Length: 169
Image (cartoon, rainbow, N blue to C red; front, side):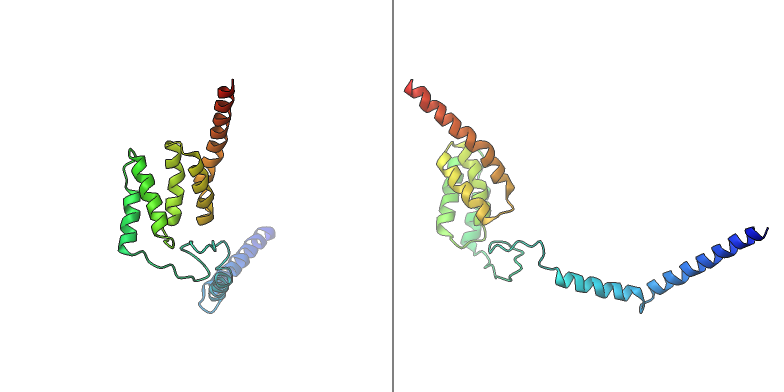
């Protein structure tokens, strides 16, 4: 019987300590404010970790000002973006004109990312290579262009080599 009372008394003491501890952690002057202050300090110290530091990045941690697009630049980009997929020559023309005309545009990265697939459809291998090399420089997080280049260029070069060997025979 004494073991039974001892078990219950220890349980009550443990429950009381847990209740007191949770109350101290929830009090404004207790652990919650210290935890909030620690979290604020932690985010202040680590705000630049994992950020992309390219001048074309919109979340640039260096604080570089990206100039807003003016109306003709924005309309030229939208014209390129919304060209019908069936009119590849028009999309190529609009993309190349945009890249030549707006050298400092923040929209150059999406144009360089879209052009390699358009060049692939029209079978313009040198232009695929050129745009494919510039797309990761403009936006290193663009992996679709790299995947497309890795899959396409070896096949294109192999087909060209096979065609050259067939012509020699």
